[in-house]
Length: 252
Figure 1 (cartoon, rainbow, N blue to C red):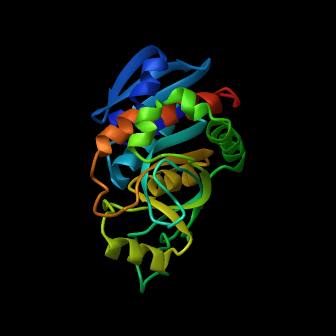
Figure 2 (figure 1 turned 120 degrees about the vertical axis):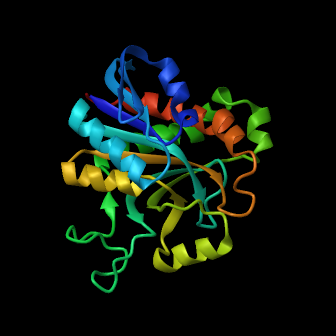
Figure 3 (figure 1 turned 120 degrees about the horizontal axis):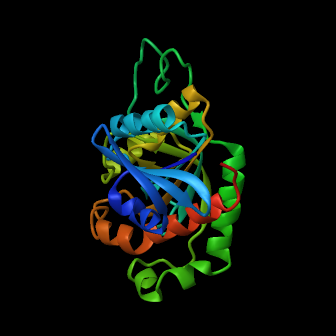
């Protein structure tokens, strides 16, 4: 069984619509959709926003549904100047930028685990990288998303970035927030609110996982403008194509 998570309904609605749903279950106020997508056994759920919500959801997927792999898809704010709206970031590792137990433990390190960064699965990332590159470089994106929508958001030649994603229970939209994150994590590509929590749970349960983020904004004062429109018209289309093509290339 493969788990698929988005933080909000708009990030996974298109995936759910494509599933052959055999059952739904409500656990902890979350609705889990069980069925098949690309002939793979899957369970799809939106976690709600934030690290606690993501932790609860990921743990439930592992304990109740016995998932063996996990895919997290959604949006993030670009904080590296080379990361633009419409680009895709594939996490190679994730960290909590707002976690700090110093001076008891090193800054940003998770106590008793002795880790600051949690690595994603290299095998899943290789598949994801190949499929995302195909989506972007072979102009598949232009047959999947209208030119009008791409132009509205200024998306011309989106690219794939691979590296560090940071997570925290904050919506990042001010220069001071970005500056603080980059001081602690100069290699960070984008910021969001769930991925590092998912990563820690998967690390502790030995579940291979990947986190894929479409850049919806550049973490500035305009970050909230047309946010829902971007998810509806751009990122959920990205996510559906990428998730389906990853599933085509992995085993249950």
